[in-house]
Amino acid sequence: MKNILLFGAGKSATVLIEYLKKTATQYNWSVTVADANAAIAAEKVGQHALVKAVGIAIENAAQRIALIQQANVVISMLPPALHYIVAKDCLEHNKHLLTASYVDENLQQMATAIQEKQLLFLCEMGLDPGIDHMSAMQMIASIQKKGGKITSFQSHCGGLVAPESDDNAWHYKISWNPRNVVMAGKAGAVFKENNTIVHVPYQQIFANCTPLKNASIPGLVYYSNRDSLHYMDQYALSHAETFKRTTIRYADFCKGWQWMVDWQLTDEKLQYATDGMCIAEFYQQHFEKIGLEDLYHQLPTTPLMQSQLQQIGWYDVATQINKGTCSAADVLQFILEKKWALQPNDKDLVMMIHEIEYTIENQKFYHIAELKVTGENAMQTAMAKTVGLPLGIAATLLLNNQLNVRGLHIPTHPAIYNTVLPLLEQEGVCFTTSTHVI
Image (cartoon, rainbow, N blue to C red; front, side, top):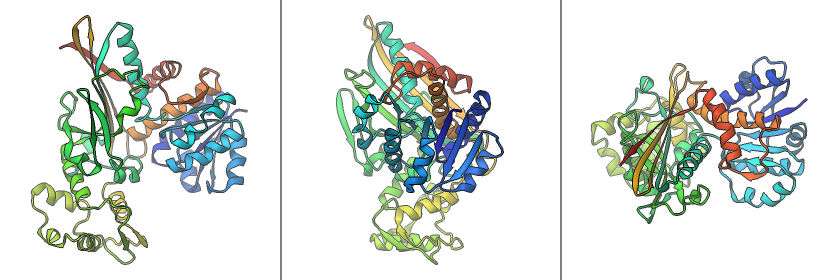
């Protein structure tokens, strides 16, 4: 009996687990869901004859290897820093590996060995990165097949709160890894615009948000995301005058988050003894520590700031942090997990927009494609759906010998995206597109 092993049962794994349960029933395969929190894994698995939940300390090599040895395909939804230890075991024991995370240097160094063993290590197979790669590559290939020369490529993606559940001044609730929310933008950004390479430091990321003019939802903006240039060659667009990958938010979010950056609330070095400390006391101590106590006593200065500070616990004297000694970023994460949590019936929203400008015989065209997926509730989220389904589909194709690519890959290979995208459409993950002469 074929076996799929999933490491990680967190926020983004919910829909993936449901998909794997359905796949197990259809093909009579077994599925193992392993998580440090056995109770969470068991709750998400429920009762299923072919799917089991297990608790695991991922650092326990014997426990980890025993599970990997039983698998045909391993899916890692662990924090990115832990993928490498799973990858080493998969390589040693000849197991395929799928993950939604970026390819790092450790994995890159394994590329030759992965190819020699005829394994598939497929990374960046989630939403962004993932669906963005597949959909963009398919559109780019279609344009180039018609003789089009692409001059500008911009890809925007964001996990948002759905309009019907948008009830706070930040226009945001957490539907994925909260640590990633706090750390967003830390690496700065680099992209190409009008044949100029642009570098944006972290301190300016959220101050440089740009209106997203052609989205179906008004009021959205984008900020530049990480190193866009890394993908120019992989997309075969090294000649493009503009190449940019960005993150979508509402304008008010970016204004507020710029304050968080300016006030060093995302700092990982400043330490606080939080036992017995309430949230309001943390803010007061923090501003004193960074030498902005005068500013602390002057805030808030605008109605927006008043509302946003209220909704991150500025005046909260009742909630104790009690996290021991931790950084400002750790405390902020604790606060946001409480204040920005999706309520049981809240819905999230995933949006992705590709904007491509190209020429054919001196005629200029503008192509826009928009993906919009709304979640069902706080568990069956759009984020979990769009991150998890590509992984589940890839695992199923792999075990059915319908995905014959081998080596270390991201999903820019036509054999991957031309196979996976139609199956995503069957699950309601599809783009609306239009092309205009400009």
